[in-house]
Amino acid sequence: MKSVLVSAVALVDPDGRVLLAQRPPGKAMAGLWEFPGGKVEAGETPEAALIRELQEELGIDTWASCLAPLTFASHSYDDFHLLMPLFICRKWQGQPVAREGQVLKWARPKDLRDYPMPAADIPLIPILRDWL
Image 1: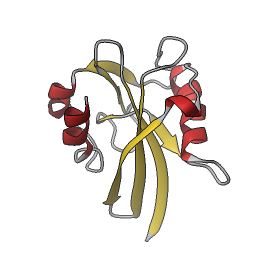
Image 2: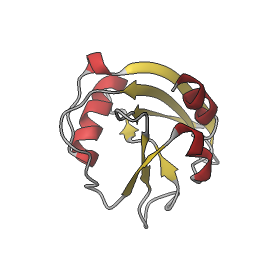
Image 3: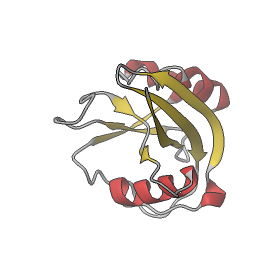
């Protein structure tokens, strides 16, 4: 089974809310909510992938020094195994804007279970609720 490395981030605003993105129609797992991020390309660190993905997907800039590793997900889907480090970020430049057709929503950590998420993301919710 193929392994896929995806880097994700919990962007936390000054009110303690976390940014979620809803996968757009036409993509795998469309309609599910997830933490921003994406695939780590060959020769790229998870932090560099997040910095790139946040610029591409949301139009915001951050730095490796502002990405604090929190936990990770390890989940087998039917056709691949996902390994996903999750970082926390509280400092960035710009306002997040949906650039790829996704819907964005700021959610309180206690409300994260109200959003349907991919199976790999669900175990991250209690860790985020405890940490935030």
